[in-house]
Image 1 (cartoon, rainbow, N blue to C red):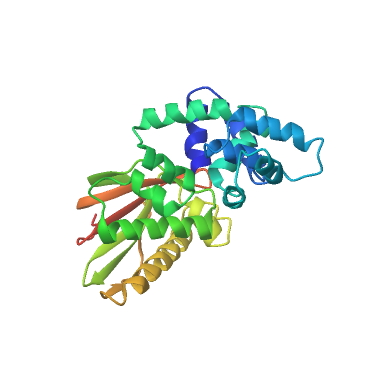
Image 2: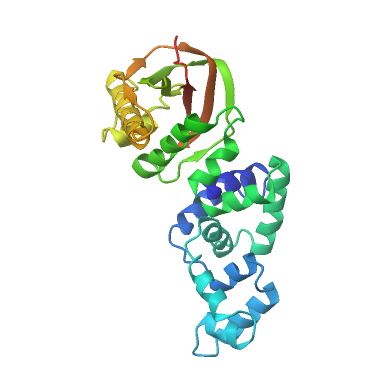
Length: 294
């Protein structure tokens, strides 16, 4: 997620263009992060020390980590830990920015500090963002009222989107409302020890972002068949959620339902979490200990 969240900030602030961001993300998928960049990011080496080892590696038949240990810049234990970070999402993004010659790691660090300030993120928040772990990132974007089992349902839905629909899915800032209007809705209620609703809604053809992939069909429009594919995805999410809770509480799923014309969803507290899926903004709606009506 950090590649899209931070990347969008770089575009919005004029540091790179949208086309350049797409090139960086495409490059990122092929990147193996250089050990020196990780060591600098982890504050274990200075940029000057990292450059020195890079130059030495060009004339010595030795691995980067071995040279850094010989120079006294790193320990064997630190090298082992850094090697484990080479697939980190944030670091591969920074490496790709550098490889594409759009920003140096030092420039990226400055921009990241600006991004942190603009969004009022704490140092702990930034660690969560850079971890690439959706379960640590999503809570940063949830409204304070969305906690407990409701937050677990939302996080499970985001994990499923990443795993089953679009690995580049990312979230935007959420909110709590009592009414939400949209062109199309797919939703499913749960009842039992708790009642709840999980829904996805979007204007225009937004729900095709989920329907086309999960339904394995290129729908011409968001008709009832497309909504049914989204409903099947919601059923999958709720099924995993109910199974996870089965040892502590009982929740049964009702059949999915749909709104294929512009409608207004209503409940006392609806948690709205916008998610970008396959380049389209889709709104995830949840209500807990109440259900969504129209």
